[in-house]
Structures are given as C-alpha cells and as structure tokens.
Amino acid sequence: MRPMKSKSDESMVKAFTDIYAYLKTRNLQPKLHVLYNKCSKAVQTFMKNNGTDIHKIPRHHRLGAMVDINCPLQLWDLFLAQMQDTLTLLCTSRRYPSKSAYEEMEGEFGFTRTPISILGTKALVFVDPDERASWEAHGVDCYVYRLLHTKGVRKTGTYHLYPTNFKVPSMSDEDHTLLAAQQFLQVIKQNTSPDAADKLTHAYPIKALQSIITGTTPPRVDSAQLHRVSGSAALNPISTPTSNDPTAPRVIRATKQVY
Image (cartoon, rainbow, N blue to C red; front, side):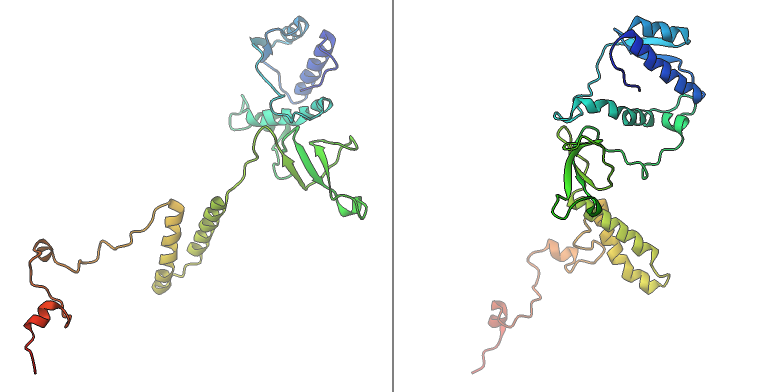
C-alpha cells in the first residue's frame, strides 16, 4: 500500500511502480490484480505491460466504519503500513500454503515484539514520570499514532483503548475461574504421587475439578450402593414394620400394662 497525493493518473502509476519495484526485491511478480471497476486506464495499461491479469469488481470496502468518528482524516495515511501487514498476515502464500503472505515477503512476524493496536481508536496513553512535571497529568488523550494536544507521535507500552464501533475482547469472571481450575487440575496431575494412598487423596479434588471444567455435576447418590429396603418389601406396603420406637402406637398397644 502506498499513499497518493491525488487521484490523477500520474500519482496512481507512480504508486504502482513503487509497489512493483518493492515486490521485485522480494523475488515476487504479481499475476492477478483485483481492481475497482472504474480504475484508471493508465493503471490498467501499466499492469498489462507488466504481465498482470486484471479482475474488476464493484467498490465495497469501507474503512470509515472501523475508525473513530473524531479521528483526523490526516492520520489515515499513517495507517497504511499496519493495514498492509494485517492483510498479508491474514492471506496465505500462493506458493507456500503453510505460510502467510507476510512471512514469505518479510519473514516470521513477532506478535509479542510488535503488538497490533486498533487503528484510529481513541486511547489514553500513560506518561512516564521522567517525562512529565510534578503536577502534570499522568496520561494524555490521543489516537493511535498521534496525540491530540501536540499533534505528534508518542511511543508507549501502557495505554487503554476506547473503541466506539466494536468491543475489545475480554474475559468474564467465570472464564477466569474456569481457566484457573484447569491450570490447578494440571498441576495436581503432575504432582500426584505414585503411591496408591496419595492417589486416592488426589482423586476427589481432581474429579471435582473435572466436573467444573466439563460442566457435568457428579450424582448426589451413588447408584452402586445397595438400597436400604429390599425390592419385595418396597412392593408390599402392608409388610410388618420394623421400627423399635418405644413410643410408637403399635408398641404401646402391645406392651403389657404394669401397675
């Protein structure tokens, strides 16, 4: 992706010439290019001269729906580098399907070293104590790549995003509890002693944690235990009672009176 000063044929051809030169340094040659159906004829002629097929489609992309409504338009050209990296990370290589297009051109992408933020989103950036006065605010409002009050660029590792068009993925308390239970279950399994007695002591908490993770509740009554009442007695409700309660009416009637 390259920014253009205008929509003139000269600006478009210059941008595509730069892109083709960059791809040539990566030993890549475009074979097919998908273009807006009202693309400049000068651009189409340039691609045909470079042996690239053209496929025309109606315009459908909308970048404005992703960017904060108050984000300055002058910042959009700064988004191109990350937009290109994001697209090439999502697309697979045609020559090596197991790799992304980015990996084929630039090498392996380090997500931990290069975190991808949400472009055009308002954020609160932390200001290091060495860079601020004693009573100055600890944070400044900005958009990604640009501050509001200085119109400059600030690099920071601590910030908070305030997206307006979508929500940042987050974990609920139930998700954190489930994750902690799974990690605890793995630790218990790793530390289980080979001794039979120790295994039995670990079996009950492991079983309870497994029921939490899998979402199943163990039965309150063990079906393997024998019933207190036999089958024949349960089917005969007029059977002789076996209660030994001395205050039961039948016991009082059968007891010999003593004066």
